[in-house]
Image (cartoon, rainbow, N blue to C red; front, side):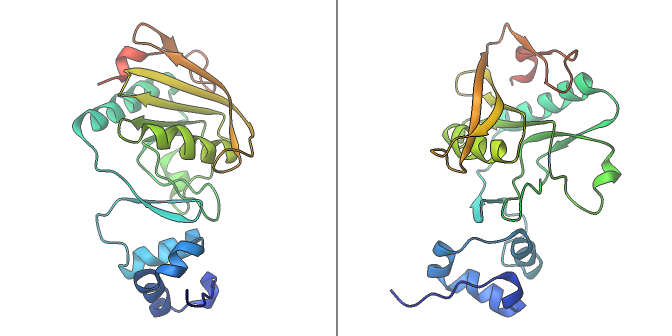
Length: 214
C-alpha cells in the first residue's frame, strides 16, 4: 500500500480537500473527518445536493432512503412530543446535532430546550431526548447510534421499532469500552402498543405507544 499522509482541516486547501475525498481511498479509510471538513465538503459540492449523510465518529455515513411508515412515524412522534413537552422546547425533525468535533448526526427527532432562533448560528450540542425511527437500521440504531448518544451524555434515547411494533427506551448512559464509541446505556425498557411512557425531562407528559406507531 502506498504511503498515506493524514492531514487536518487547516492543512488542506479547498481543492486539496475535494481531491482527498474523491480520489484518495486510503485516506478515506484511515482518517477521521472533522465537522469543519464535513461542512467544507458540502460547500464545495463534494457531497451531492440532496444526498442525505451523517458524520458519525469521523466517518461520513450515507443515510437510507425513508419509506412511508418511517416518515409517518417521525411526524407522529414529533406531534406527541410537542404536546408532552409544551412551550419552551423545540422539536427538531431530521436536523443536525453537533455532538462532538467528529460527529454530526441527524436523528429523526430531537427535543432541545429553548426556541428555534436559539440555534440560528449553531446546531445544538445536546438534547433532552433523541428518537430514531428504525426498520432497516434497527441494528445500527441499537449499537452505533446508541453508543454515540450515550457518549454525548444523552440521558433519554428512544427507538421506535417498526419491525416489532414497539418502543425501546434507553437510559442511564455510562462507560462501556466494548461498545462502538466506548459508551452505552445501562437500562433498556420495552413498551408495547398498550403502554404509555413519559420522557425523563417531561415526567407528566405521557405518550401512548400506539399514538407514535404508523
